[in-house]
Image (cartoon, rainbow, N blue to C red):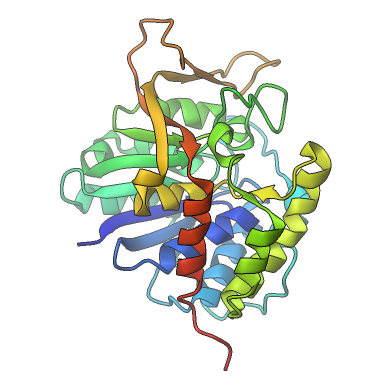
Length: 316
């Protein structure tokens, strides 16, 4: 029986790959809805990008929602310098014909979790945690319906990618991240320490492009655009695919390993705002609140990604 999931996202090229991976896996994942949040680009762009990716996938059965347009307490910080002004620069997307639901994304999350069987829905959080935190604030009882939260966010060994001390998703809305980390449900974090191990090297890019279908072509074009930033910044032979690690973990958890530790979010310091203070070495007595993923079988990850992208139909 497929696992019920809600995808909360701020597309972003890597978010788009994660969504395509999830929508190509109906045997394992039942996507109850996709909710956009402001993050990589403002909400009008992220919600449009959700529509573009869902239309590309052909999965018109999946409802889409717009969530929060700004963080809980702070001005929005975006990342057009990485993703381009649209958030999905690279391929050409026709204007989508599908539509968002009228309901606010936070209300969809609350309504779905309150109606769900206990511990039956997994939240896949690919961007800032604003929507999920607002849902928890609006109706704390939603924790009853959550099986776990799997989120891309944070870092320990890699420290930060938007500031010297913070990963982007956490930095944009640290108060939201702190709220989610304290909610008491099982949490799995895919931090930069993990995602920086899944690089789209030239052979891996060639394998994706060789699939020949429109979805794989779009992935190739999106990654070719976003990797320019990472190649220049890090000197790597390819760009990391951050957000697809969340979906891949649900599909093949055996590819991943990590450690149950305590993770707290810094919200007060201007210097370390958004830092994920991960007690990797368990030097405090703070109770573990997350499975902090550290290592991944990169070849296994890309074999899974190529197999699932290959399920999308060829042109014509």
